[in-house]
Image (cartoon, rainbow, N blue to C red; front, side, top):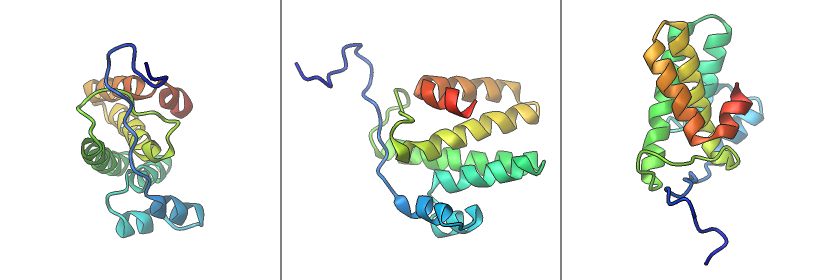
Length: 137
């Protein structure tokens, strides 16, 4: 028996491939808009755009950015073998862009009165990564 064998019978954790470009651009002071324009598949860039919009009170704009990051993340998860459920660990840094976008989508949905979407996204975040749900609030 392998030490990494899943004894609960659920799907294995999904680990997205690392794409350090957007993360490095943002860390070096680049804007989220530049990061999204340079690497439009980056959930992290879209999540950061959503955060900025939300902080300035542009909730509908935040919702649109978050939804884009969420869908880009779903595409990446599927390409990585994800079957629609299972862990997406926060501890694996490349997963954080998707998890941040999912959190931002839940937050913005709640702010515009989309209670069902808020609840669905909040539960999806908790199911994907309890750590992300705790860290992101």
